[in-house]
Length: 202
Image (cartoon, rainbow, N blue to C red):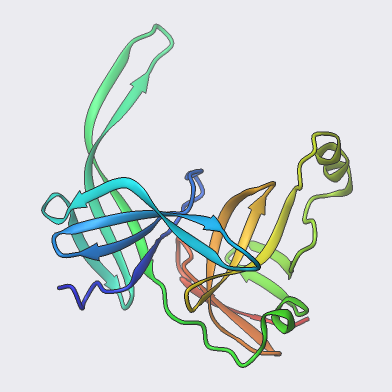
């Protein structure tokens, strides 16, 4: 089992999840959780969280190669206008993608000088590293509030490169890079199909 779940696994954020990135590792009978901290350059460091799960408390299902679901028992609290509150037992399903080493012959600076056309389901945008993504009016508001705004940054954890989307100083989302050359970039770890896409250089 240790070999089957070896390595580092990235929690796949959905549209309604606003928390920090979560990395897990399987160790003996436990699941260890880690946060991420920016280091020098594009490097990220893992920071141990105060959260260690017992494997016997979690049901794991393999969805596809390098992708799993973990089912956890929990509760949902419902609040109503008349101050009534209901608590219901439920099972939460969280998906994780195993991180793999990025394949590339390009240097980090060469990658950051490239621009790509991003299309995933109904979402379209241009991938331009280190530039503010917000509209000009929002940039003015951010400037008055001393905020950096939304931008895309190239980052790295061990041998995996990421397309990191920041909102001010906070990581909004991490998309691992499977492959990149001067013609395309292949991203994976999306919450819905397709889980992997190829974006062409523009």
